[in-house]
Length: 318
Image 1 (tube, rainbow, N blue to C red):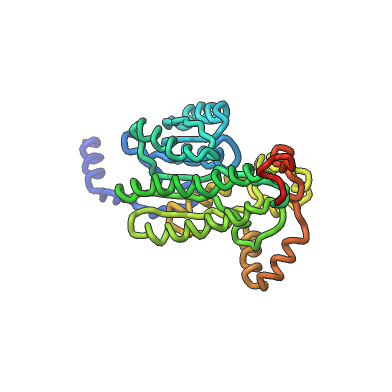
Image 2 (image 1 turned 120 degrees about the horizontal axis):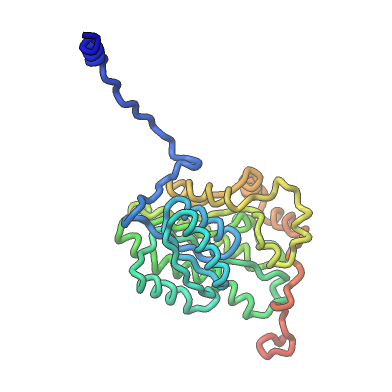
C-alpha cells in the first residue's frame, strides 16, 4: 500500500516547464560558431605565421573554423597547424606564399579551389613597414610593400568576395591601423597611406555587400605586443612607450571577431586611448595635427636590406 501512495503522490506533482534563457552573444559565447561536421566554415588568414595573424588563426580554430593559412615561413605555419589541429580538432591547410609576388593571390586561390574549399571568412593580415624616409629606401622595397599590403588584399577580396556573395555568407577583415586614421607622418612613409586606403576600401565594400550576407571590417589597432617592431628595427624606441599604449593580439582579435560577426563597423578601433586619439585628430586642424605628429620620427632609420643604392641605374638621381 505504501508503494501505491507514493506513486499517486508523484503523479499529482505538476511537471516543471523548461526554462529558456536568452544568452547574450558576447565575450567567449562562441558568436556565430560554425557547427561541427560537414557544414563547418573555412577561414583564410594571410600572414598567419606570427603576430595578429597567428592570434586570429588561433581564435578562429577555437571557434570551430577550418583554416587555410598562408605566410612565407612554412615551418612556422606547420607548427601552428599541428598545435591547432591537436587542440581544436579542426582541419588546417597550409599554402606558403610571398604576397609581394604579384602572382601569389591568384595562385593561392587556385590552390584553395583545387582542394575543393570555399572561403567564408577572410583575414587580410599580412603586412610590415619599410622604415626610413621615402627616398632612403630603394623602390623595390616600396613596391614589394605596396603589393603585399595594398594590391594583394584588394585582389583577394575581388577573387573571394564573389563566391561569398553567391553563397550569401561572408566575413572580411582587412588589417588596417590607427595610423590610417591619422595625418601622414615621416618615416615608414607609405604605411599610413596604405592603411588609410584599406579603411576606405573596407567602407566601400561594406556598403556594397550590406544586403548580401557579407560583413566587412577595417580593423584599426594601435601598438600591439608582437614581433612587428623587431622586424622594423625600432624595438628599443618602442619599449620606451607607456604601458597604456600597448594592446595584446588575442584581445584585438577577440574584439574584431565579435564585431564582424555582429556586423558592427565597418571601422573597429581597439583601445580607449586610440579611440580618443582618432577623435582628437578629427577636431584639430589637419595641418596642425600633421605638425604635432611629425615632432617624433620613430621610423627614421632604414633597414640595411632596404637602403637605396646610389650606384644602381634605377636609384640614380636625375
